Amino acid sequence: MRDDEYLAQDALGLAAAVSAGDVSPAELLALARARAERVDPRVNALAHRTDAHADARVAGPLSGPLAGVPFVLKDLHQDLAGEPATSGCRALAGHRATANSTVVQRWLDAGLVVLGRTTTPEFGSKGVTEAALFGPTRNPWDLTRTPGGSSGGSAAAVAAGIVPVAAASDGGGSIRIPAACTGLVGLKPGRGLVPHGPVESEPLGGLATNGVVSRTVRDTAAVLDVLVGADAVSPFAPALPDGPLLADLERAPGRLRIGFSTASAIRSAPHPEAVRAVEHAAALLADLGHDVEEVPAPHDDAQLARDFLTVWFVHQAVEVARVKAETGAGDDGFEQDTRVMAALGRAVSGVELEAATERRREHIGGLARLHATHDLLLTPTLGEPPIRVGSLDLPLPLRAATEGFLRTRTTRVLALTGVVDQIVQRNLAWVPYTQLANVTGRPAISLPLHQTADGLPMGVQLCGPLRSEGLLLRLARQLELAAPWADRRAPLA
Image 1 (cartoon, rainbow, N blue to C red):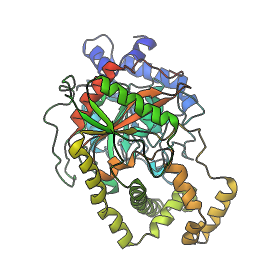
Image 2 (image 1 turned 90 degrees about the horizontal axis):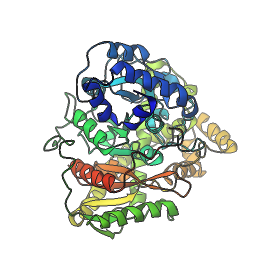
Image 3 (image 1 turned 60 degrees about the vertical axis):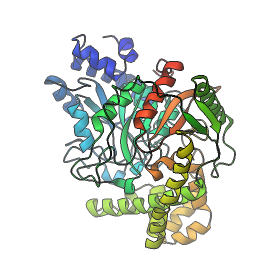
Image 4 (image 1 turned 30 degrees about the vertical axis):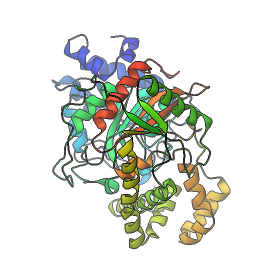
């Protein structure tokens, strides 16, 4: 198989070629490695290579629906025994996993060949992938731009043609944001559908889940089929799809009622390209026979953002304390923004945390009321086109002032200076639409239906009610057939 033939196939296409004997897993691994050696020095998508593990895999028999297909894991809660597991944190630079995560074992059982682990921001805490441990990861469509985060390394690896599909995870948009930035499909499954064992049960109180970024809808469906179902430490047994999602993919979704909105209290004026992306998707959906209309935002997204960040900051405080206890690391093992979030999390009272958690009912109720009259909600995935690498960095004077507050443990004073508001605004204003699905636990998918005038990808998001993964995938397949995107390649690919 030539490099151009490798690039032309999605994961299922490569698996079919292996099954037919047209190519061997070892040959596919060599092609993926050659791609990585050519393009990764420019995009910085791979945090670690797992060469010995991959060589052992292709030397033996492989079985499963994706046997022989090259794959990469995200370096965050997707542990591969014996390999580095750093979560993008300098304090964990020498840490290695002792066992496979449940999702990783399921990917291995499906026959995938893991050739590396991808970059992530520290603890997955940002919508860009610029960890101090790894350096910035860049977008294959424009190397001055971010591929998003926190699954930015995985998205860059797929968009650059290293692998056809890559592991990702999503606690606030971290599958959908990178997919939107790099022209890929990104589905966040509903709460609990994909397990987190064996170490964790339900990270971030159910906000986070695992999945993939891919070039085709069928690859996303095939990988989700591999992952679904509780494990021994799952907090509950979710209602599973009625059958394999891939097998049902070509069934028409029927005539749907779809409400669209670009409104956001966090970003009062969405970028014109975000509006164009939704208008284009709405027109395409109407052409396909669906009933599409503009609707008010179904929730108070300013309050939802505050509640989301309250939970997130407390989570960062817990993570920093855990890593310090396990490694003996000091503050210099963590980035400043992480320490700010952890300090803010320590300042949250139990009552404040419980109130933020309890208010999920209000956000769920608002979305449920919309879904009582509309099958799906359509929004932008991004508030603006992929931002430039480094644009979320605080100016040096503010960084110096922030360090002083952290060292003197006067975090509440820090909050009064407006620095915290700047951090929040800079990090959420360009991605204000994705947290709703995490807080409510509903499935949502980003699809690469739009490009800016400069040729940058701009995804749109469809959010559904509980158990609508199959519907989202069937509609995504209908859109993929009507407006194909898989052959649209990043310049680097």
